Length: 256
Image (tube, rainbow, N blue to C red; front, side, top):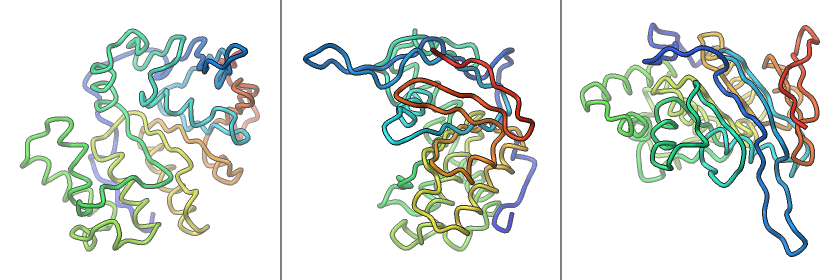
C-alpha cells in the first residue's frame, strides 16, 4: 500500500481462545409493527462467518443490508433470533455487556466517516483506546505507531474539516483498527470517494484481511465485492444467495 506500512502489531490481538465460527447467526429477524401486522426488515437470517473471511453483503436499497451490519456491530438491539460472537451469546447479553463486547472485538468504518469534529486526527485515534482503558502512555505510543503506519503523521494535529474525503476515510479506517479488533465492519466505506481513493481503501482492506482481520462490508459496488472472498446477497430481508468468489463454491448458512 502506498499509504500503509505493516508492523508487528498489525495482526489482531485476542486474549482468549475459541473454536468454530467467529460470527454465527440463527434465525435472526427484525420487524416493525404496522396497523396490518408486521413489516419485516430481516427474515430468518442464518449465517456463519469464519475467522479470516472477507465477506461482502450486497443487495438493492432497502434489502436489509445495513440493518444486518448494525446488528453485527451491536448498534441495533431490537431484533429476534440468536447471534454468537466468538461463542458468546450476544442475544442473551444486557446492553452494557454488548457494548463491552463491541469495544473489545469490533471496529466499524462508516460511509460518512463519523470523525469527531472537535478532535484532531491524533485525538480521534485515541478514542477507541480510551474506551478499552489502555493507559495514557501506552495510548500515546499506539497512536504514534498508527499515524506512522498509515503515513498520516503530518495530519495528526489537523481537524476533520481540514482533510479531504479520502483522508477522512483513511483516518476512519485507522481509528477502526487501532485497537486491533478481530472483526472489522464497513458500511459503504467508499461511497463518498472517487475511484482512485476507493481502490486505495479496498486494497488496504485486503492487506488487513491477509494479516488476519475478519472483514464484513456492505456495498453496492460489484468492483469492491471482488476484493473479498465471499458475497452474501440480501433481498427483501432474506439471504437469497451466498457465493464464494474466485472458486465459484457455494457458501453455507443461507437462511430461509
